[in-house]
Image (cartoon, rainbow, N blue to C red; front, side, top):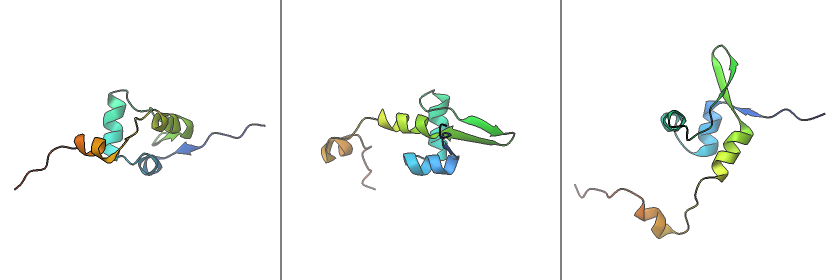
Length: 77
């Protein structure tokens, strides 16, 4: 007997990915994030395996200089 797949609700997806709700929906509209599955008339969730695979495809930061070079310049105001 197989174990049923875990389904994550939106808050769990935010915690696991580290991105905000608005960013999740923006990425979904760009087809750059897994789409949710309908759980009921008023609830959706994301398959844990789909979220895990999405995380694994994200590029990694190799060093601190690479991270700071991708950040927008801050104003001196």
